[in-house]
Image (cartoon, rainbow, N blue to C red; front, side, top):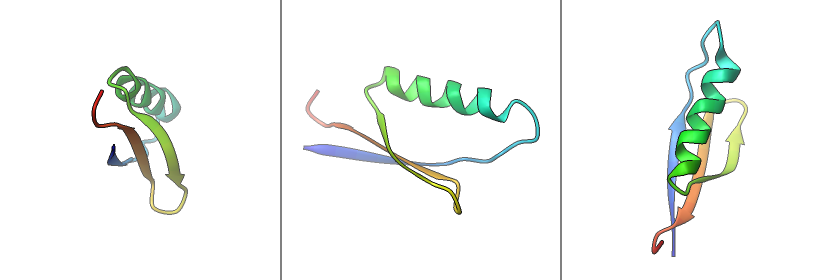
Amino acid sequence: MKEYKVISWKMGLSKNNKRLEETLNQHAMSGWKVVHISENSARIVLERDKNR
């Protein structure tokens, strides 16, 4: 079974790519993987196995 998490990303003026990379890496350490990034609404959908 899978579980999902939605992150609303707030873009900043400086170091935006670095902050996004750090956020995604932190979630990846917990087993999350990106399945979709919405361009217009700045939402990122993550997925992982629920029974890990």
